[in-house]
Image 1 (tube, helix red, strand yellow):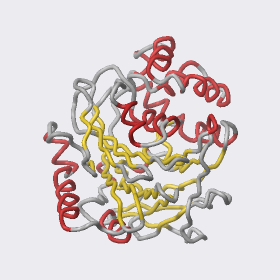
Image 2 (tube, helix red, strand yellow; image 1 turned 180 degrees about the horizontal axis):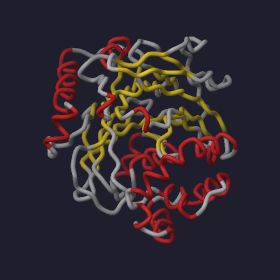
Image 3 (cartoon, one colour; image 1 turned 90 degrees about the vertical axis):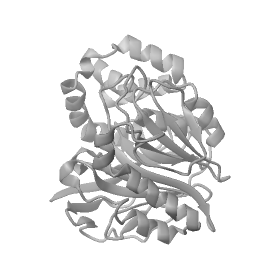
Image 4 (cartoon, helix red, strand yellow; image 1 turned 90 degrees about the horizontal axis):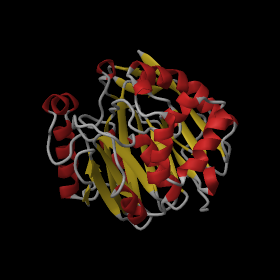
Length: 347
């Protein structure tokens, strides 16, 4: 069995919480970066040029993040996530509007030991963002104060090239975009180092899934879901191993029948084939997150049915200890608070 303690951190400007994130995650990420030849990639000057050209708003924040973490040139290069080593996560995500309004729900699938297990509410550069930490400054999914929600999946292709790693892209979208159209305008021109799918939804209910690749232009779709392929399965072994088509067909059939409500979606995402307990093989479902853009509510849950919410006007919830086994995931002790709305104030 494997276990994780999920933390909920809250901080306006980079400071103690940011240093905690770096202290917790950087040793593992540093080993990943160096053992996979990240040190032989673009130097600090090239990484800085890429940020300045493609993600200009992030440069000032980058300086602050490195300084507050007491970091060096290697940390700076890593935080740019410019042409990093190969990076895969196997996920399922869906965005739609039900009777209560827009929502985005996603399963994050990986080896639990590789996840940073941190939900972080920040207000960097005056914009509130909440989401699941990925690659220190990046996010695997999240939502901002304007109600734009975004989530990533691996696109199931072996192609690689010069470009940004996807966790930083999710952070950038939520840090600087107000709605789905804003995010699409950024993604259309952004170089990406591998193939990923980004699903977006905003408080108006506008949904888009963008299929990003290093070797072809972005494909913008109004498809409400994404698993681990794009136009088709282009990496057969990976497709079979992750059951990407089976997961996609499950979502397609569901949406063809009716618009499911939140309870139905939670049950579906905590059941096979969307939920995977294959942690020993590196792609079990580590957590499920659900975002409500119209009322700025966020929850995180596990397969025993436990969901924890965060009222961001209140102190962060206590850590939640989760145990993973071949039977799924379960919270070892009650979180101590009922799910609550996450109320983000727009900036």
